[in-house]
Image (cartoon, rainbow, N blue to C red; front, side):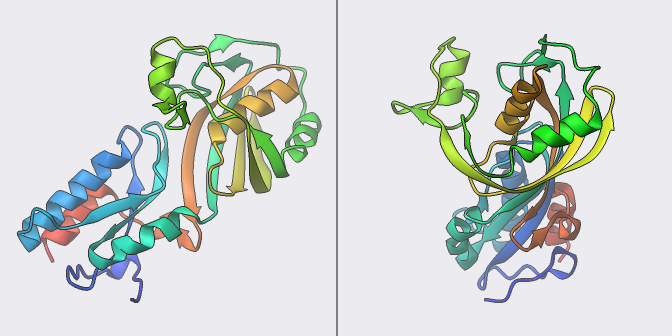
Length: 237
């Protein structure tokens, strides 16, 4: 089954295919799937037409989300295993319970004394295999219950640490309390947890304030279309 780029993709329901989506901030991954699935089902006239996605993105994140339809849905478990690349903004000096802006930031420590050299020194400590604790505000399970349900019920449990592989971590810019990084990671790495851990190592606290996924394996976000563009493309085939 040959893969096609989004820019020249022809919707072939019987053969199946991959759809590279540039998910906007504010959309859930399911929102994107539902938009494109609806367009596909309106064309094929089959309510049970299969469409799925690999590698969920949080609503506050944007970027590459890979969908598959028809026979290509069998590829989704393999795509989920692929390494991923993100562009992230970390805000120093404040932490949040969710490690991102889903919850309210709380002042944590002074950051103005930190120069670029010190930030680079700390970032270097997070390259390679590292232990990471997933945020409780996540889909990870604890004793059979999703973490985000436990978090919203006020539970104070901590999820167990896991080993993840951070293959590359580059400092892109320092803008006052905000630092921009590009990070290439293994499956299962939480960039929110990485931001929190970097803040702890710097001694000032930090949280993830913006996130964009730019690659999954060999697939790039520059080859993707928005959910609305996909719906128009499929409907106007």
